[in-house]
Image (tube, rainbow, N blue to C red):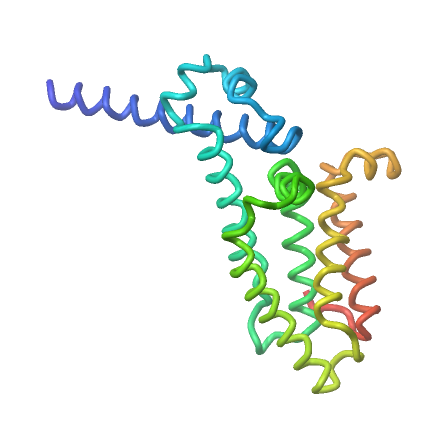
Length: 216
């Protein structure tokens, strides 16, 4: 019985820590998204998480470490999520899937997406360690698109600019969500509107590339 009781207490402690760390993470994302690294404070993060500042520092080393953790999480997620599919897929399907994944991430996690933008606006100094992998991933996409062009599967175009344009079109719905909702007079959380935006973006890009509609 004593062991069972001890295990139960330990389990509750672990669960409590997990919940607290999740609250800290969510609070930090909101603060960093709105104010950037320089403007965010551990005091504000603690308040959002329902903690005192001293309690917060029991769980984190400092603001720099917390920011690095969240920025790293974002970059790793993007690296795994935004690969360019399988080579046996059609160009239309690969591009459509890329746009879908990027747009849905922007719509579902706009605050996390905006941390990348606020970091860039502040000079992007903390992105230095991530650039080599990001550039390598982009180069792989460029090589695949240039292969399609060479094979006559889509019109001649600048592959690197195509990737940048697709990024900009989808990132808009995270960075400029307030403007988008004003112009559309609707919440971006609505599934019907999200699907409409996706359909328009995919059609726009595929037609611009001289590609047929995606099969999915």
